Length: 148
Length: 133
Image 1: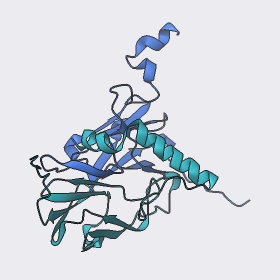
Image 2: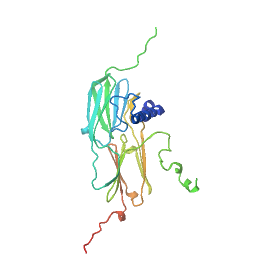
Image 3: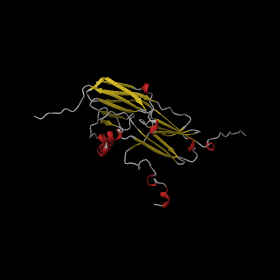
Image 4: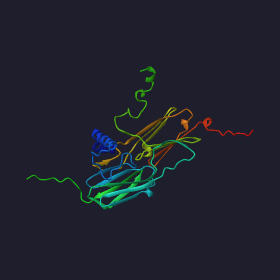
């Protein structure tokens, strides 16, 4: 399952520690760690995962309750942008105890590996997850280097 | 520990029943909760969870929401980036006595779970007319 897959690479104590430190840095106004220029603060809607194989790159956008027609997926070279709108209608007759769900416009931009083919992109939405599959131009298989 | 607390099997971790089960990380679904004259509505976000991988349990005191996310992944995939690092969602709430837990209605659509818990009829507010005089 992707849980073990994605946690094995990006998570663990080290990652938590780095996150914590990054948050501390923000509090202290210090910028010790360079972060991605398009990185967004933790908790930003929608969260995304990216996985790759030698043949393709898959981006998973966890956006529950979004009308698929409102989602705009575009790719320029290797920069993928996913934008859309999620509306959470407010019940005017009711009293709210918790409002944690995001309401409004969203946009995320993700730099994919440079060998993706921007002409071969597919997107589908199921169970609240948008999956964008981009094929790679050349199979980026690890090459065996012969030692002479 | 008092003996009375051992009556349930999960007494030790009754606060967060889902956590004690396995050492796997658990995602906490984001929720909206509101109350109107008829009852309480919980809307929980669980993207990636299909209806048949969802578990909603309610007894007199507790509401438990659980689900397992499943996404299509090609063989041999390697993770490049991950905001979401677990597949299991779980969250629970303590209910109160005026809620009719036998009449709970749950629906799942596009990863959003909507649960309606009606109030017992005697607890629905009745309009009291104020007469002049």
